[in-house]
Image (cartoon, rainbow, N blue to C red; front, side):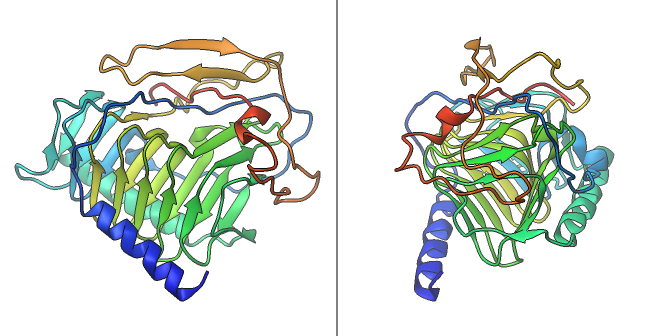
Length: 324
């Protein structure tokens, strides 16, 4: 990436983050991830121990703030900081879990977020990735970016039949991860949000309508624009978690649940962003293999979205919902 483009994109991110708690327009929130049952598996990294941070869907060392629209967080919320600004916007935000502000549980979680972040950042990479993740299909492994990561489109994570497969993404200390409008992370062939980890050196940002999967451990901030959703966790070690306008959904994955039954194929679960968190509808569909996957190749071939109308058509989604 040219230095000028890098600086300009980072400047736009900084300007967007500076607009925290800005008012947005109303839209539905949808989480889409998927599972399927393929024939083969490959080795993956060791799992990441989140310790006391594992029960938190949103945790920040500094503050957790929500805008004027209802945000639904299914999981615990924590802040390791006292004061009136430590937790703002709840209500209208709704927490389906426990809230811990500057207590013993928050202190323990803060230490474990730090330890997990260091674990992820220190792992040896299997391959390099980025800056663009959109249109890619990746097998289990540790992927390191040399710069900012950008998701514009759909990233498919293919577990190759291993429900315990682990995916780790690393960015340098001065880099960020941005998911553009209506982008998505799709999990397929047994991939589980419980085993997807994103170590972000500075800021993590989801734009309107983007759908993300996995545990994010960001150094400086995590910010979601209106309509963005996460099946996983938002854990920030030095700064805030911000739901800018609100109308977001963060769903802690059920990491104690058994894998899907052997005879089950891919399925799709759509959760609407209603304040009561009610399910809008589910449906099952036939199993379909994602395109561009080469056996034995850690990084599968890229498939550009303009060559194929929608990567999401290659594997339908299932929400990784529930409580730890």
